[in-house]
Length: 140
Image (cartoon, rainbow, N blue to C red; front, side, top):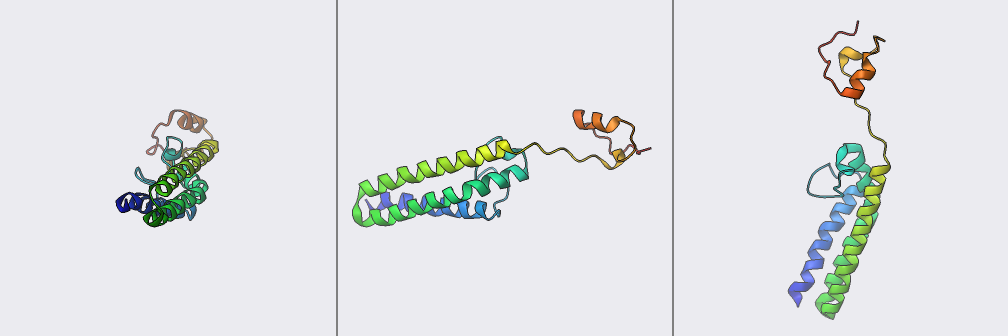
């Protein structure tokens, strides 16, 4: 039984740490921690926003895991299982909130290369739509 109580305790510490880092916007975009969906991984701004929104629920989920693990050492398996289910439910809800906030964020327009600024030739809109590399072109 003590080994089972350590699972939500340890997992809760990790989830709470990720939640706090996301909330403080200190979690860099990565493929291992935080809210990772196609919407959040499309850019740094989307990842940062999603994890800032999901930070408070993830922190709360981690604290639920830590408390249930600590109480489970003395109270028993039922407390551990209830706390584990609660931790997962709160973490999933936070992830959904973060994902939806990243989806609502408009796409970032790519910055034009140096050769395409201010020439008024009409090609800049073409570059934006196609994504061509015109970095060697002079803007005359």
